[in-house]
Length: 130
Image (cartoon, rainbow, N blue to C red; front, side, top):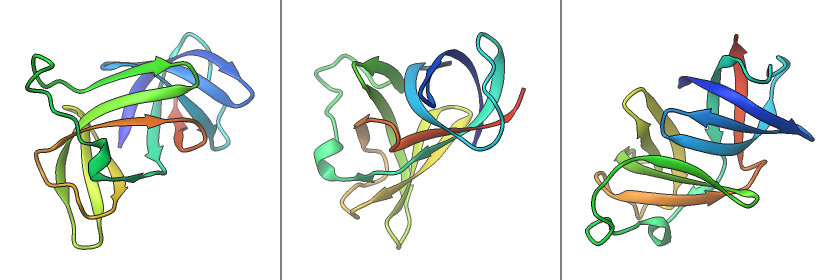
């Protein structure tokens, strides 16, 4: 899904991007350069298998809200699983306008909230337009 981000920094083909839900560190992919400090359209890819070990309980955390933050070399993404098809492909809602495909082990259920800790290159952005 195409999302508008601001590229804050780039080092060794890894970018820190600011999104509507927070910041993340991601591998730059594709042939288009990511201009620093300017809004660009990107497509996110997540290349990990989500398991029930990624499910978080938000009852004690004070609410449910998608978020993204950088924690050292990792991106920490929190989102809601909207669905999982028969092949184990999940649909992770990161924002009202951002739904990302995510491979699962089949243990996640729609409505569960997950927290993924991902390092580049397992999370990537393709710059699609400036």
